[in-house]
Amino acid sequence: MLANVVDFFRNLPPKECAQCGNKIDEQHECYGIYCEKCNVDFEY
Ligand SMILES: [Zn+2]
Image 1 (cartoon, rainbow, N blue to C red):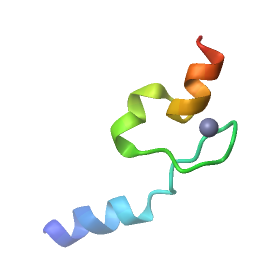
Image 2 (image 1 turned 90 degrees about the horizontal axis):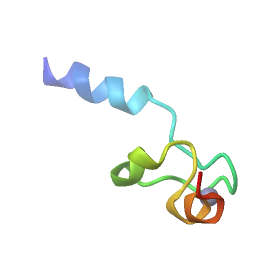
Image 3 (image 1 turned 45 degrees about the horizontal axis):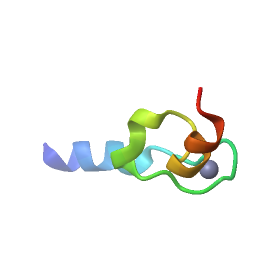
C-alpha cells in the first residue's frame, strides 16, 4: 500500500523555478512557481 504512495511522488516532475530553472525546495512550495531567490526579486 505504501509503495503506491512512494511511486506516486516519484512520478511527479521535479519542481523548478520558472525564472532561473533552479530546483525549488519542497519546503518553499508556498512561494509558487519561483524559487525563494527569484520570489524576493519579483515581490508580487
Ligand atoms: Zn529562481
